[in-house]
Length: 442
Picture 1 (cartoon, one colour):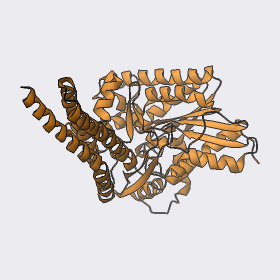
Picture 2 (spheres, one colour):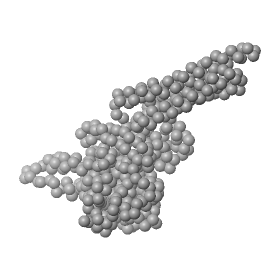
Picture 3 (cartoon, one colour):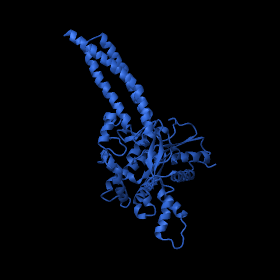
Picture 4 (cartoon, one colour):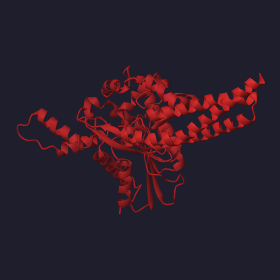
């Protein structure tokens, strides 16, 4: 019996040595494959920087390979039953872990990571390219870059330097800058404008905390976390999908807990990690894709734009939103920070007073809290009307066509700004900051 066990231990030690060697070699070969695979595959929003995927597999294969080799050598000399049992368990774990890491090569990771309170947030140190769709159905490759805090912004120190003006921009994909280069968002454009126009401060840091798909309840938590940066003012960008999207997505409001962000919602951080940050978790999500919430959203957003906050379909949504806004306004007031509400309209609301019900609700609520508001519905309506030249004999249809062409200069799609649209937002903010004597013009 002892001789038979010795033979089994000897064979298994050789297997461990071979497996450890294969794991170490895979660190080189699989890494090379990942880079090749990355360069050949089409750009996708679901894949993040190749460096993170390479590092995950490389570190796992080297560490597990060395430990497996150690077990193989040790078992060949110290043929003990308990060590044999531990080795079997370790082989199972190492194969499972490396298989999981390999699956990430295929499915990658999304640009977001799970968060127990906010559902998801931007992945820190993200460097990637994603596809954005324009009015005409054209696909453009847009850059996404985040800093250590997960903000689509340049990196900066948490400690505020003396003589620096700091602003925090809260919002969703409109604030984030969907479809435009990070340097062209209204946050960055405002920062550049301040450097040229102001003589009151030495330096300027306008912090873009926007996250695609965020609503007011998530922006409240972002604001709380951003207080550590000691901002002088805060803006809150409100988009029309803020009204209904949480009820389609967030499980706390009866939503699916999963959408186009490809992040499963979980109140447990460990379960959230296993579902979203592992290869097997990504495989499960691929086999069970998210519901088509974007298509559902368009209809309900249009309806929400035309019905009051007392309508049975939207009364719960508006109660939540106004409660969230009150919390945000109080937080700003408690910390002596000026807050500005920015209302971002959908293009179909421009020129249609019947589709501007949310604007009225938001403005009235802001007045109760003495909060400044910039309603970009009126701003863009004014810009478009000034650019149109009425020609005798022009039909209403022809004038609408001209108006839509003008709107396309400022919008990439129904609810996201172009570079020029972001410039309009930055200019209006600069004007308000000047009027408020927050800055002093040169």
